[in-house]
Amino acid sequence: MTGFWAVYRREMLSLWVTPLAWLLCFAFLLLQGISFYVVIDHYAHFTSLSIDQGPAQTYFSSFFIPISLLLVCPALTMGIFAEERRSGTIEALLTAPVSGGAVVHAKYAAALSTYSLLWLPTVLYVVIVRRVVEVDWGVVAASYLGVLLVGAAYLA
Image (tube, rainbow, N blue to C red; front, side):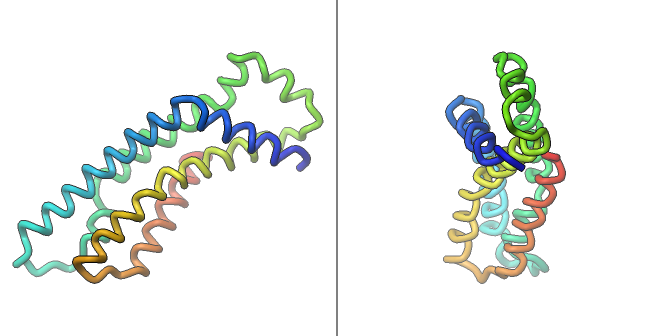
């Protein structure tokens, strides 16, 4: 796959230089922050209840996760090839010495990398919760892996 890294670098640059990724990051982190606040507020007010799952499990099973996936994944992928066509660079990209598979894989890898970077700041939520209660790191790792794999499927 010749040219993969060149197309990947160009796609990452085009994603993060335009306001799309920054606005998407703001909206995504705002939604995740609201979800985190709701979970923490729930556990702060109902401390005497016998619970089967901790805050980390509740955070990853909240209804904010599917909503954020339905907002983020289409916003990342809808403009990948349409922007090339709109700006007139699709002809140069398709006639360059880059295979078609490399173009598709590089654009997908850039969208997946951006998606992963959007989830990176949410690790701080687990660090904050860890200071107060015991966190099951296996559940957290499996939850992040699940979110990454579901997002990868949605982006595909």
